[in-house]
Image (cartoon, rainbow, N blue to C red):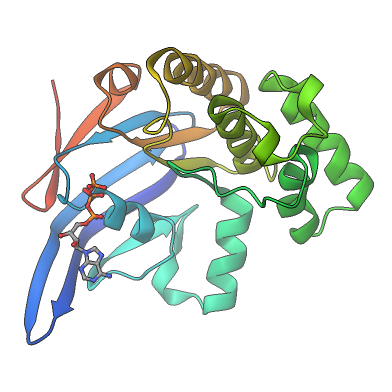
Length: 227
Ligand SMILES: Nc1ncnc2c1ncn2[C@@H]1O[C@H](COP(=O)(O)OP(=O)(O)OP(=O)(O)O)[C@@H](O)[C@H]1O
């Protein structure tokens, strides 16, 4: 059986709004195997981003548990959780969240340096990843000197620099025009297949969801398989 990198068991999440409690997730259970590409779809406000935050250990659930590489996230201290997250998870958002004052190369190398890699190695790795995403000629550019598609390529390279087991992507091409989005979709598939990194991709885009191995829909606070 293939290795499970991330699993959610009966996850529930409630938020309080004044005196009211609103339930966003009722019972979400699923597993992602190494190398799997999973798409999560669902209407706006259905709880997809909330789920990604729980899966990435950015927040803890009201009930249920998340295991990353077999470790129960709630059993760890904040510092241990953050270390496990940096080591095993890459994040990609709709907006690139690159640091504006740093070059593409520095943006990609930074998480590796923070993770403890020697700067020379981190920069070599960053250069290699930027080549993989087609940006060899743009390494010294700052985010403001790159196109939207190029910035998302840098964001993908940054997410991968610590060789995570899984990348969590929230609407990674939501801000791009159709052709640019299509090229990023292809790049995600290529990186997933060549590196063996698992991906969970939250998306409204049918064409991106169609490229996943598995499609899940967030419906009434739970995940259901589509197809
Ligand atoms: N910290 C919070 N406090 C209170 N309510 C919250 C909080 N975070 C999210 N919510 C609510 O939870 C619901 C789900 O939000 P979420 O962002 O997860 O949905 P989504 O499916 O990602 O939506 P979209 O597709 O529009 O990004 C929304 O009603 C939102 O207002």
